[in-house]
Image (cartoon, rainbow, N blue to C red; front, top):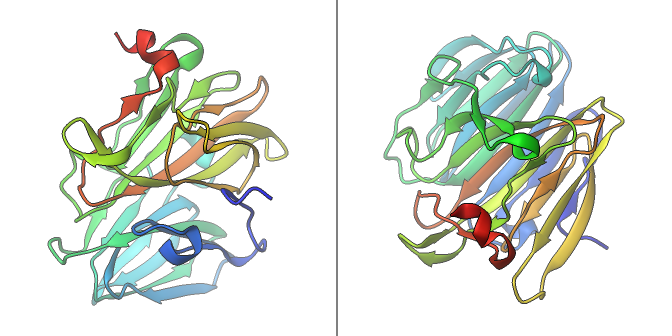
Amino acid sequence: MNTLLRKPFGSHGKVHEITPQSAGWRYVGFSLYRLRAGEVAAEATGGREVILVMVEGKADVHAAGQDWGVLGDRMDVFERTPPHCLYVPPGQDWRAEAQTDCVIAVCSAPGTGGHAARRIGPDGISLTQRGEGPNTRFINNIAMEAEDVCDSLLVTEVFTPAGNWSSYPSHRHDEDDFPRITYLEETYYHRLNPRDGWAVQRVYTDDGSLDEVMAVRDGDVALVPRGHHPCGAPHGFELYYLNVMAGPKRAWRFVPAPEVEHMMR
């Protein structure tokens, strides 16, 4: 059985809950709520920091002792508009009451308390192109290294047009050897348009000790504990994914796979 592919365990309420313990690693956590209007999700952050990402829909959010009002205006993730997000530091609570049907991602990692609660986006998040030709994809950077908004989380959205590759050329970030490479665990929350579509994600190491190819469906989560991790969207199926990364250093440095090094020059 493929241990890197996590299917939603329901269609309503909390449908994903990936912890460092369940993933077999140390840093990244990822949960997902699918709520109907009027329903509530609430959690305490404990010793972890959290970024709430309004993937779809609207919710009235209270967190860290503040009323943040209604967050969200993207009703379909494939609108490609910037998301509304909220950073919640460790030692705080958050509560979201759905104003419409909504999808809320809960991205978490160890926190030090070095940053205060704050909105992230939609202002300041711009859809940017990366790659060219059939390697073209479009990025909404939510909290990458250039954004000093949290202690250890790195979070981004990627839209891959039908027929294109993404997270490619293949690369890995599984060693703590900055500035050459950083150790970052990673989750991919996948969505497909149309929803009955599929895409492919491979996770593999240079020595072949890990080599798994996954057919991902709408709503699946793939885990990347180590190794290279490219994605492919077949003709006819647009692919979205939300990446969550964290490790001992909040920096994204990677090494390409040997077979694609010539593409990086």
